[in-house]
Image (cartoon, rainbow, N blue to C red):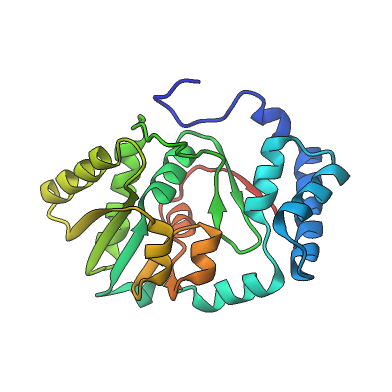
Length: 237
């Protein structure tokens, strides 16, 4: 696979490109939500539902990312902020989560809207982050959001154990300096825990962080709408 892009995997069109596959995925997400709402474990539920609909590995990955219990969806919605809430505030941004998702979106990879209204993709860091053709455009989109909504400060948080995290941190800081943006970037050994325990507003689509943080904002949803981005979007609800 070409590392200069973060596009589709070979075979993704077969798994997600037809109405038949999307319908199957929607039914699977409904079943998964039913089981999670009744307290079944995620792993057991996804195996059961995956077998029922004969889902492939990447489809099960989407199923897990898109599904949540009724109470999780309810609680996430309660903590979700709107654009006017962001003015003059400090925001902590889940660096790799947001950057890779935007890179995937800009590369025409499939993006999935989950039961909680959050957007997720199928890419991962896997221990090393590689800059791609869409990295700068992704950062520029975040900058546009930052300036347009008069956010006071934005802190990018990256996983220290990921290879090249120091390099992307420097790219962010250099970009902020050039464009006179009040941005910071930091490396954390456990960014999920750090973000979840922060008293600031969080930007992430990581389910565990959304369940544990105080307040959050759906940046990807905002950008898709505000910037009228062309998205290879699959709604799973």
